[in-house]
Structures are given as structure tokens and as C-alpha cells.
Length: 472
RNA sequence: GGAACAGUAGCUCAAAGGAAGAGCGUUGGCCUGUUAAGUCAAUGGUUACGUGUUCGAGUCACGUCUGUUCCGCCA
Image (cartoon, rainbow, N blue to C red; front, side, top):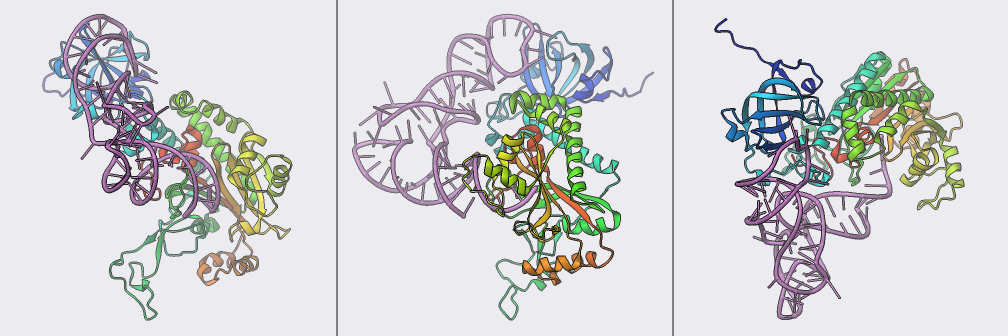
């Protein structure tokens, strides 16, 4: 037939390498050059990546191709589109490769000598400074796929259990979320602030007619939907304006916050454990190629650690018992242990890493070191709070059963000198058809760091925001 | 917010106050089934910035900026 446009099948590297197109068929692949080597045997090896899998796809370009002079000059980072036959590879490292019949160079690298992303290990710090190019590296590519796998698994986990994903607001007009310093959202002219009679900034002139901030937690909002749809969760960006300079804090991060009605602390802990197991299993099943890389180059133990989580039950322990264990440990801690004090990193690390050796759920903390919304236990000294501590990363989940009894809640507000007015709609939930309910927050980036073994949280989010740093 | 450490070639790092170097990359050869490191050569620098001490500063002092690590706050 004449005049028929030949429709070429376009395959990703992943599809190509898994044998989706039979040997002998003709397909097109697109990607960026990772390595290129010319052979005097009259052809070039061009290995390209397109993000679909860890492995590169090898394209063989014969010197009979009309643009072979250009092809021979390809360097790391160039983008190409290649069409040709699927053939069995004669070399090591891949089962199939492409014998190109056509190879279009889409984009050159302007100055190969200074192209920052060489096919060799770079310091994470350097990659961070090149956050626009680092997704082309093995490590960030692999991290991105694992991150995506975790995110999809989180949604799948909840969807399979009839949870509704609630899109809680990013902008909040209440400054009473109680989880930390907040970023102000304002359209007021900083050079010329409107003032009221008392000389204070007049926020009634601001965009929302009152003070507004970026959310530090979707929990308070999501509780309203919990007390109607029973099983809900949020999964979105969260902002903390704290001056935290550590490898596990971000100013902007993603958080997963399930909230379940008619559930107590025990069920809450069970849910947290089930979710962690589910998403770790997903990574093991779906991203073996990337995890293999992390095990090889980043953290030898990362795969066995995930297997541990999937296969073994989490340890559960009361705060009070944990204090006893710490006291009896004969370890010399920098901060002394005493019932009533908040656990320091060194204590959490000892419990999770040395004493238990796998994730541990600590429960029932003294009420004075926990948030106002946590449910008071019958002993009236502790609240139904829980933290999941993971070896190596520390607190990965924090949660609690919420105080659903209005009188008790109001007492708590009074004790902490918080105003009932500020929490009027939150109190309404306790006035109208209140039920026991529980929930927790999973720091998503902490989870990604834990899964991959990448030690700095700034390297498991595309564009990290931290104090004094918001490049890109 | 506190403490410690660091900044030298595109990258990874040397250089005990006395001539700024190596490996990788890149470019050009040689080799040829290679795929982060075969081989020969070439290329590559305002030593973060500023001030000072010194005959002489990458090196010492002070300040600034940036980054890392640990702690605190938390997820």
C-alpha cells in the first residue's frame, strides 16, 4: 500500500528490556545517553535511560547510518530517539538491545566538558546543588521510582480498605493546629502594613480578612470528615517554619494522616503496622531493580530491613516500661531518663536499634509532653499517644486516640491555656454525635529515606525546602 | 536556636607558611562487545568572598557567605 504512514510502536526502556516486543520487530525508543562508546568494528554502543526502570537500554548504531559522524560524538546527557530492530544482545548486561536503523539526535550537550552529571558517583551535596539535573542520575532516578511506588501503595492500601482521601486545605486560617511554627500567607504590603487603632497589624485588610498560614497538619480538618465518613486520610504537602537543621527535617514535606472513627489506640497501632507492612511489601515486589542498586551502593541492609518489617510483628511497649528499660540499660545517656521526660533521639535509637532491632511502637505517654487533642487515659497521667520508631531514622509515625469527651477536652484546653473559641468547630465535633476515633501521621519523606537507605531527607524529595534554602 | 567541621580544575580529592598536583571527565590518538574506572597524550585554577599578619598565605587571624554533621523542635 502506498501513502500509508507507518506507525512505529514506541516502547519505554522497561517495556523493551522485559521483552514486550518480540525479537525481530521494529520499534522506537527515546531517552538520554548515559554512556556511549565507539567501536572501530564500525558501530557505537549507546546506552540510554528514560526513567522507566533502573537499567539502561543499549542501542547499537552502525557506521552505515547517514548521520554516524554525529552519532559518534554523542556524550552523556544527549537526548536521542532511535528506531530499529529488537535483537538479542551479544554483550553482557542486557538480554535485548536495539540495532538502530535510524537515530535522531534531539538535543546535544552544549559543553560536554562541563556537563555536571558524569556517569560516576557524585556527592549527594553536589547533586543537591544541581537539583534540576540530578533526576538523570541512577540514585535520584531510583529514589523517584521508589517514592512513587510508596505513594501509589499508600493510596492503594487505603482505597482497598474503603478509606476516603480527603483533600484538606493547604491554607489555614486557624493558628491553632498546635504542631509547630507556621508560615504566614499574606498579600499585605510589607513596606506599608495597615494598622488598627492599637497600632497592631490590621489583618482584616489581608486577603482572607484574617491571619492565614500554611498548614502544619491536616489532622484537625480531616477529623471533621472522619466523623462522617468513618475512614479517611490526607496525603499532601505540609509546612513547618521551624529552624530545624537536621538530615530528617524539611520545611515543606508530605504527610499521610489516616483518621478512623470507632477506633481506639490499639486499632490505630494495628493500622499503622499494617500500612507500613503493605507499602514495604509493594517496594520489594515492584522495585527490586532499584532496591538492588540501593543495597549495592547506598545501604547494604536496606532490602533486609524492608523484609524484616514485612515478616515480623512490631514490638509494642508502654512509655512507662520503656523508661524502665532505659534506666536498667546501664547505658550512659547524655540526657538522663526519668518518668515524665520526653524521649531524646539517643533513647529512641537505643530502643529501636539496640534493644529491639526493628520498629517499635511506644504508647501511652505522659500527658504533659503531648498535644492537647490526645485522649486522657484512665490513670489521668498518660494519654493514648503512640510513636513508631524505626531504626536509623527515628520517629517515622506519630499518632493518638483523640479526646472525644467534651468535658475532658475542655479541661485540657483550660490546663494548656488554649481558648475554647479558637477551637469552636473542633469542639462541635464533640458536641454533636461524638465517637472515639484515632489517627496518625506518617512523614512520607522519612519513609522514603528509610526504604532507600538514603541518609539525608533532602535527597528523597525533588526540590528540598529547608531553612535558608529554597533554590529551584 | 546551639555546637563542631568544611569550601582548591566540570567532578572526587592531595599539597606540614616556600614553584598549585593526581584520578575521573572532556578533546585527539591506539585498542575494540562496550555499558562509573582498557591505553597514550593534551586540556583544564581569581584555592568561596573580604580584610589582616608575613619577605612569602590554599595553609595563620578576624569577618561574611554557603554547605555538612550532631543536638533541640517534630513527621
